Length: 461
Image 1 (cartoon, rainbow, N blue to C red):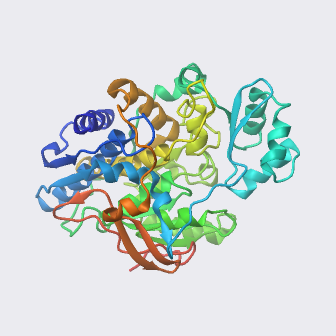
Image 2: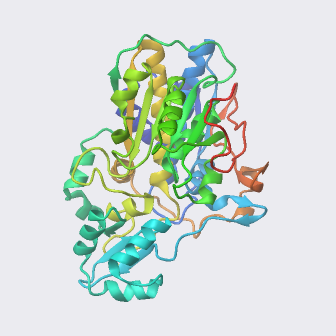
Image 3: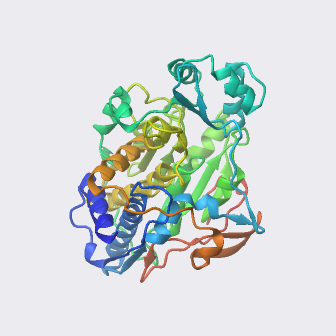
């Protein structure tokens, strides 16, 4: 497993042109496959988390002149790919799925996957197919639809429904070809600014301010990982936006949270005020949503020279599906990760596209901070769930599938050494600890999760 993880890590470093990463400081603890899948998710998880550790260590080295040791346990990294599954609030598991979300066989014998975990997406699907909120009624209605008609209708309405494809079928699709042509992590200079050296500080990201405009998992995990290494993170939401409380909690460690309504002048002014003192702006909303309101990478690089703008999307910036809404399980179904062409499709035992993309986003942001410190400039970091899916498929071809699979995802009782317990406004939380272990600047969260909108739209003093 260690060699496989190192090969996956090399692909990450090569994709971003980081050829002098402090690999001598990294130790990767091997592990057997912890998941009931043959996909090499453990190796990729270990690689992505190792990349975040290397980037954090490099920033601290810029600050202190010292190199510290980094250790990543592949077992912990693998289970971090299903972090929300292990969250307990007052002893109770809280992760859930809407009953409408799932796989459906349709008129031509093909399969589709529908995602309705947000109420407005669920209700949109029920309206489209003219059925009540009943999975069996929906299943019956879909037998008169073709898979292509469902995918087209859902896409036109901004809903989440795709044909369940094999990997080969997806790789022939125009969207797959467009996405595969992009780097795994795209880092580009988008403006001029003088270098901003990293001052001496206690932690790699001390005094770095992050605006987190994201929901669900991938974007929030990027921001949570930055908080893990000392960044001040302000999650920005709005009262009218839907949320899933279990994910708010699991991705909320280390963050402040404010509410800003961008439909009002005061809300726009409040966000501009936060941007003026921010280092990183994370945009994981549907492509174009924030850009149309004046918060594009170019606009922010002019307003705040030296900004690091991180964009996370479902299907990337290229191709016919660039504007399409998507989530981990939807992208996995479309891109051939959940069906071989035989038997019934099934969700993976974790959500690797979300979590891998989240950690890779944090790595990309920290690498851009390193470039800002040494070269100056404003930077744009771009990732997508589908490009991460392509990487998973590429690495499966390179590394091969796992020789053995676990029978089930380990229950919480078997991983007590990976757990921490924290009091919070939601109740007593039992949750997975940070995976990356740093010898001089231990990864930790200085704040517990808070309900959305708990803080003023001001940077804490």
